[in-house]
Length: 359
Image (cartoon, rainbow, N blue to C red; front, side, top):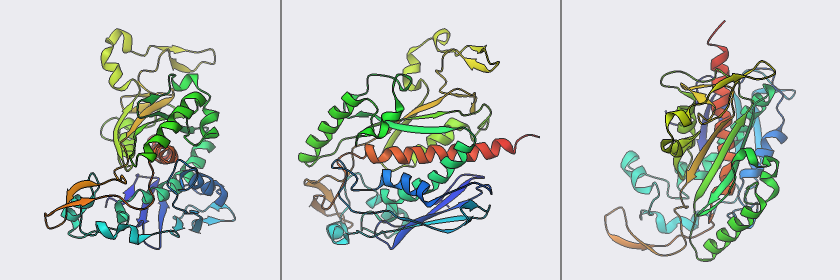
């Protein structure tokens, strides 16, 4: 059903925002990969709430437990089960939404699909579910690093405040040097100030996360329906609050002529096939070409705002509703590790599929 993702490297997540816990089962991870709890915990710590003044103050440690799939710190080839227990739910913050439909949330659509819903924090449709993806993505990241592939994402825009440089001109080692996770310090401070101002107005603001994958070999992806960029797009659009995905030159590429947009091939001094430009974003014909893969993911402003809004309840009656509880004024800083995780999951799956596609 819709709770699983991937073909050979496959994950299935479970749990709700205000249930006992959330988790994930990873199936298809090859045996022999060293995995430590600390590797997974480091990724979760980047996503967890309460990590800075710019994020929701919900206090979840997000401590991961490995229930199966490892022996003496190494994967066994059997399903890997990871559990993260919920500890700081405040379900009473959501009693006013039991019958009311929050604007731009999944309340109404969930009701229409299932005929019932868990109103406590959105239940299964809550962004809390993404912690399970991040845990699984940490394992996928270790597999990719074993093959020399690195995935890094960063906040490139918050509202109208944007990084003025492309990823090639940035020091991506600075991504975690500030709470915004923007590797351009001057822009990061302007972004942080915008988030503070937005929070103080009881409002929210969106933005863009840029993702980059380096060291990806040529040959990953499928030529028809499971194109690499299509799988990346599906992965990103499955993340809560994502409104758009573009890779390579994206929409800006429509302003170029073919003679300007084509990526010319050449052979470098090491005998490797390269392209002189990378408008393709590292993908041609749905298959990686060995260049950097880069893309942008647009996140809308968080739908929960702490100010009154007009809506209706499940009986169609007009009501006024204001958000309560602890919420992010901007989801972008915590979205970075989620984009990292989903990118790693796609590439890990495609890596295994590519190895199975020829002698």
